[in-house]
Length: 124
Image (cartoon, rainbow, N blue to C red; front, side, top):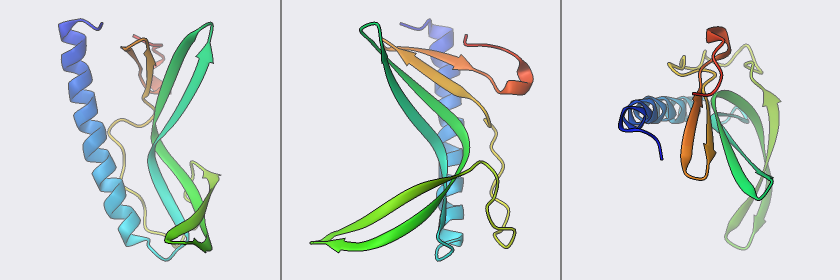
C-alpha cells in the first residue's frame, strides 16, 4: 500500500486527470464530424513474472475513427492510432494538459508515479 502522503498526492493527481478528461470530452464534442478523436489517457496491461502491471499514460493521443456500419443494435467502430500531434491543422487547438506525460504504474495495488520527461524523475 502507498503511504498516507502518497495517497493524498495520488488523490490530487487523479482530480487533475479527471478535470483534464472532462476538457478533452468537451473538445471531442467540438470536433465531432472531423473523423478524429482525442483520448486523454492510454492504458497498457502487461504480465511479467506472475505479476500484472498496469501502465496509465496521461497525455494527448489522436485516433482516426472509422464507422463500419452496425451489427444489430451495436455500431462497429475502428480506432486507428494517429499519434500525439494534431493530425489536421484545421482542427482547433486541444486543451493543454496540466499532467502531460505523467505515467502511473500500478503493481499489486501499489501506484508509482513517473513525472513528465522534462523533470527527469523516474517512478516514485
